[in-house]
Length: 495
Ligand code: HEM
Ligand SMILES: *[C@@H]1O[C@H](CO)[C@@H](O)[C@H](O)[C@H]1NC(C)=O
Image 1 (spheres, rainbow, N blue to C red):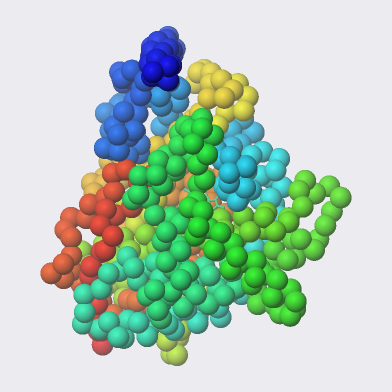
Image 2 (image 1 turned 120 degrees about the vertical axis):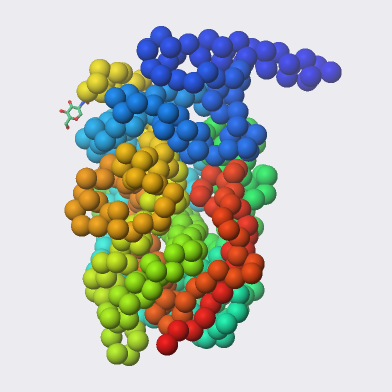
């Protein structure tokens, strides 16, 4: 009984508190939409009816071009949403020192792994780690991973041969391809999930990032939006059993390699180099936990992002057969006689790049970017944002704004041909922008382009009897995710 009274009292106090907080934007003359008690503008998101990206998109598309920003309340907290190129540049690049962090929050005790990955680290520690890790993601390093990737694409080709003429789940296919690519490049092991559908690593990878379950999606939601809940419920960002398993795999591979002194030009080699180069100014020592955290971040950030991109691109190819054919012609004209595709070739294909960008535009994996303000900042427009508040950049809304992308629902690679992409710099943000943009962009793009080219060079993807048209998306997931676990397309050899 006493608990009930306590709970009711807290709710009432919070209710009054939010009521007061909800004056914030009004007094500053910033456009906002009427918040509901307790939840602010977050009610639909909290009850898992809509995605936050979608809420921002609706407001953004309603507003006039000359409105540079608007406000939203996430529960009681005012968040500023900036929507002009100038302001986005200010936050992400020009005044980065005022906005150096994301707010994603982790509990170091419950979840040391996520607390030490690049995604969650803050300020100096982040900068130190980012500088140390950057060489691992350079073009030179990725190019050297070519032979490792070739082993995987050979297995991909085998699988395609054996699927000829059948309807296949391309979401599963793409996931297996990426799990194998990332396992070999980050963990130094062959996961063989393309060979064996029930490969343990793949099963664990699915379990780790699955957001369909309530607890998992709640944890991710809290991680981004409501730090307090992470502490109260002691929520880890990644699921524990599977992440423990993968850390084990990584560490035993690392130790084995150190013992045998083998070099393979993968991420393990690089981590080893980083640790070897000790400096007395180092902010942290990369012990086993901190090393594993980086490997896990690579695995987490690399598999779903890139495999969903590949899945959605294959889907669009099946829906737009003339685009698919044009792309296949380019691939066939570019590959060398042995049928393999070099790093340089992948970069040289122009239409492939347009198709890639258009997929990233239509389906940005992260539907919004966020930055946390660490010191009061007055924008050039005159508006001041306070330390501790958060700025959101509505990626999905910008990518679907007809002002920049006429007829935004249409899949049209030509829209960003040539110089046009330059004009779109701050309104095309699939990888973010500025010092904190995605560190794995080059790696993700290369593994995506390689997989897509290997599939399309000899095979076509077509809608089949089980293909879902139009595709539906998961409403509650934080990331852009198809609702259906299986995306079925027919795969057929073309000569
Ligand atoms: C198509 C694939 C990918 C997409 C669409 C993507 C997207 C993003 C986005 C939007 C961000 C936030 C950037 C910002 O806040 O400005 C990000 C950050 C990050 N991504 Fe990716 N990513 C992809 C692949 C990868 C891969 C393969 C890795 C491998 C390591 C990776 C590692 C990271 C890390 C570590 C961060 C945090 C960077 C930092 O805070 O310094 N991503 N990614
Ligand atoms: C933002 O950055 C610009 C250029 O770096 C600088 O001149 C300006 O003072 C900064 N503004 C604030 C409020 O820090």
